[in-house]
Image (cartoon, rainbow, N blue to C red):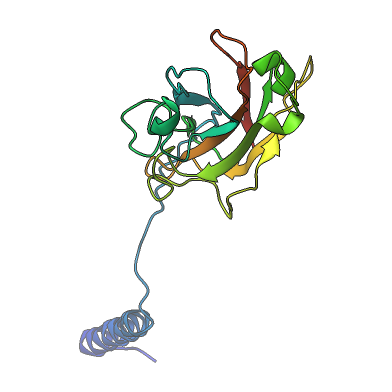
Length: 214
């Protein structure tokens, strides 16, 4: 059968209309499905862990005379009656030893001392290991609510300072000291018993603070 030019033209137009109609249906369905073009981008960096700590405050009770009877001086009280400093004011320098986490990871903090009560006080009547004691508490030496960083920490009871020779310090201060700048402090408090026959001279204990990543 021969088709005229007019017939061929009509068939071509019909084919174009059908093709466009199918394209519109496909595009409409894609739009309804929310299909869009997209690409992924990524920004990545790594911070290396760093552990470290510093002592920001040492203990200096000051100077006092020979006691007339046994007295206790402590970093948690006013010792002015015995001639030493008021450790509650924070001005005399006899508040507790303050340990600051300077790294970016939580720390396990231990310490050791080069002397116990005998090495610290040398000799006095009835000298016992309980005459030189220590305890840890959260926060700074004068304020436990200032920068407390020891997670789940409670104020420990007084314990005797032991002499450690060699090895890693093992007397615990804090098992989890945070690195957050506003909460990164823990302190050591000290209590010393002085008898009337305590020898004259400067008494010094050197502590080694050990800070390792928790």
